[in-house]
Image (cartoon, rainbow, N blue to C red; front, side):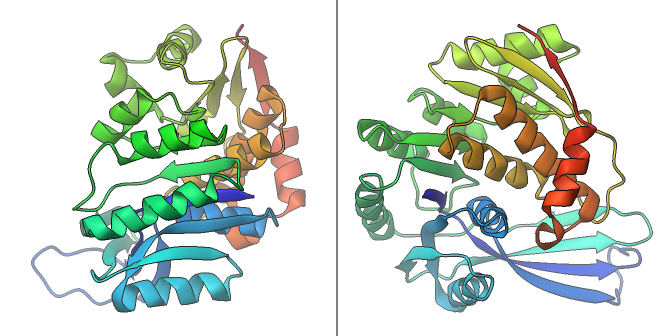
Length: 310
């Protein structure tokens, strides 16, 4: 079973306007409320793919109850530590006229007791499950090295960890050599301190991470596809151009779900990269996890080109 970790989940409220008028009255056209958090998003994709998984993390208050209820209604298994702090709520404003999106995210908060309880639960989980996804931001009250600690504990039990994070927590976690990391283009450029202009640069960027002890690097390149590499081989994946149906937000989490599914199934590096990139492209094209199907995935996969870089 694949376990996804979300230490800072959120109740995502999405409001749709014709055009946001700053400092003035705005009339809302439509509103949607979703269970949010990168790990939770990954679990929702895996559930749609009928791949056994469970979302774990920390939730609290009325927002936490709404999140667990939403997941239950969608058939997503979960096992959260309960906190006395209210789970955060994020506001996402989408403008129909310009397709611009504005996000206003709360920080979230948990206690040290919550973290201690979660670590105990995690230690039990790694004895029975061997593929974990650590993703998303950290709430106030959590040390930046929490991902590093969880990776260390997982590796002691020979579990594979997929890390999708950024900032200081990513840098600290990288020192513990997770099995796979998935930076996007901006993140890898920030990490290296230089621009990525071609496949040779992508290879150098991947090598930097592989030299830290990471087994697999997947660099997502948005509409330009992806690059996946190990010490032994590397592939540039060119996905077909598709029209954005709703939003590209969530495509990265969909890609991570594809990576987790293939790694848990012991697929080859090439096939892992192709499936993950194809799945993310399908999400962008169809605009909904629930609408992704085998026919669409196959059609996009048949239009995807792969170049062996080394």
